Image 1 (tube, rainbow, N blue to C red):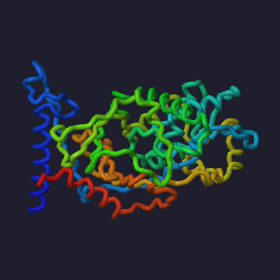
Image 2 (cartoon, one colour):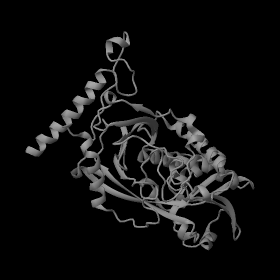
Image 3 (cartoon, one colour):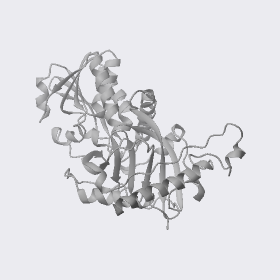
Image 4 (cartoon, one colour):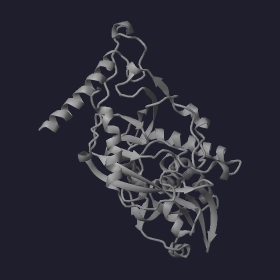
Length: 394
């Protein structure tokens, strides 16, 4: 009983801090006015931030995903296997969902260049579903062959944050044209993702993300691996982040920046993509391919290979390196509509659960770790790291 009273007190204290700021019009990037009265007739203060219930007893599941990282960037090229053209579309690191549409457009263009209209897609995750949809829109008949469909596919274990250059490549390993190639994929993906805004179940929505720091935000420190970063090429797609003063947020840290960016509710998004694919005449076939020669049983002459990390085994592609990522799923909180990042821990307020992920001190965290076993201690530590943000200030 005592602990429950303490929890209620913590929640009430956070709400009181947040509501007080909201009443002054100081949350949500609102104005610098110190009083609602100064904002003019009809002024309405933004709603307060609801606290995240960061407790280990609310963990309802733990998932692990292996990001398919390639130092040279995604593999997007054709290869002849027997009598078939195989167009590879895999190796997107932590950017699979974000780049899926732009990557799919490039893959489908190669696949349809010879005039074939009966297309096979291998893989039922983010890249497979989007490539299949694009091929359908271009007039092709499409069958997806996959061992796992969403939500069992690895793609379902992603956080769902717009992150088009997350572990996309190593800066010194890409060709001179890759940055522009990446930008084309990112811009086309962004445009198509926005077409899913406003739909039932909110497959895509925009959220505010708060980056919380205990010390001033300095220049990025040297990292063990020099991952490629191209966000400067698409800065016009999202609003710039802004620094918030101490009175403009309810968090007990001295330095806060706020940004707005897209988020994918992957359960709903995958459901929409799957239904659209089926309604447009698409077919799913459960299948597992162990060698490229196994593709010989397919009737289609053109295959788009979207097997993600599975391509490492199927194509004996040792250039794919696993980057382990684990998410602790807390019971959903519909009232929480913002994301945050603090001490290497990120949260994402998905409709199917509050994702809490330990991203580590730098992007090399989890590199070359193929362990997909959930780690309860890691999950609880991640939740415990953000818990003090929602407790009363001393």
